[in-house]
Length: 354
Ligand SMILES: *Cc1c(COP(=O)(O)O)cnc(C)c1O
Image (cartoon, rainbow, N blue to C red; front, side, top):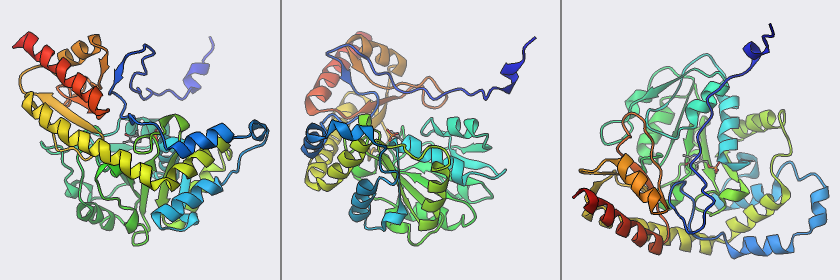
């Protein structure tokens, strides 16, 4: 009998949000940006010389790294870029969480962390958020093999202060602390200014949300030069040509269009604040969000029911049938028009049960 299956690396993969193909759908389920990328990205794509695809890309993504270094006021040697922040974080797990000690993250958080830990055989433990979905820093002051959490957290939207995060970083000089800032541009305060103070801090961001470029797959990390060098060594030991040339230039152009970035993130923040008001009026409660989504539960009607009813009306939000969060919906902030359609649909659904 053949037994090759016993040698297979078996894992339970991450489940991404649905990407429905139908037209006329209101898609508020994967935290994509409802606005297009900067027009400078369009210009680059339209003028891109197709013949360039013949060549291997710049392994260092120099144009993009330089743009990011300028924008975030660090040296190019402090910037690592990858194919989406999922690629960046996966590289960081492989590079920094390389001991027999336990890696720590919250129980309610980005559902990819436990998947990476499993695939790389990294021991991990979760630390429960409190009843308001807040992180207790004392939970992370103990021996560990590394720490990771998003700020603002996903899927809760809760932002933690830099003081609290600094307390965790300071208490853990023997392990790397990764702050996943996928949603930081919607009103939070970034930890990037702390990277020169703490050698063990890695800050990760993405172009998928605030820069409207989920399809281009661009993510980056900022940290101490030594951390970035270690990450690049691992990356260059697996695949040196990860980011295609078009993504590299488009990414740089998007970074240089600061005005458009400020304008669109500003509109999303405004729509979010308006949506908080409307959701409260409809009987929902939610932790205060500093991201481009709201994590809401209704005071009397089951989240699973609302999720299915919204889907029938071609409105997609995200629902997890998991302990602690199975009565919540994560609703991405779309355009004002999309949100109005959502609120009308919710009014209708609530009346069915009222
Ligand atoms: C969206 C998201 C990412 C990954 O985004 P990429 O598209 O891979 O850049 C990482 N972390 C969190 C918390 C996210 O929500």
